[in-house]
Image (cartoon, rainbow, N blue to C red; front, side, top):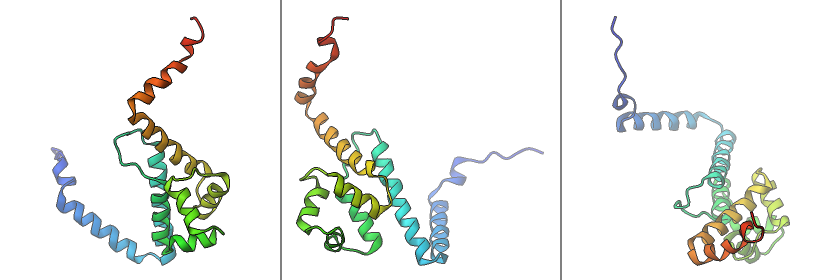
Length: 155
């Protein structure tokens, strides 16, 4: 008996993609509200981790604020409510989240506890974005070449 080869188009095509999307939506609707929320929060956490680990410097820069907005949307909260919960002024929280002020340990620990993520992730977003911005300025990159150890030590 001859085996029929499965073709890529038979598995991955717009019709099958839509059917799969509908199936997932139907299954999701059967889940409890708590499970649906847990799934949304987990998806945000994975998005955050993927962003940190991605080395694609041409991808969109996402700020801490962007990730916090994802959490707030999933939880149906406002930034003002979060600021009050964090015992901060809304304007101060916004400055940290938007990158106008550098994150500090207190804000990072609050974000970590709130989102059930590791504190390092929030710092890593900030550092990744700073490095991306710095690398965009070629002059800056050349300035830092003077710190190459070979300029200090004869090899």
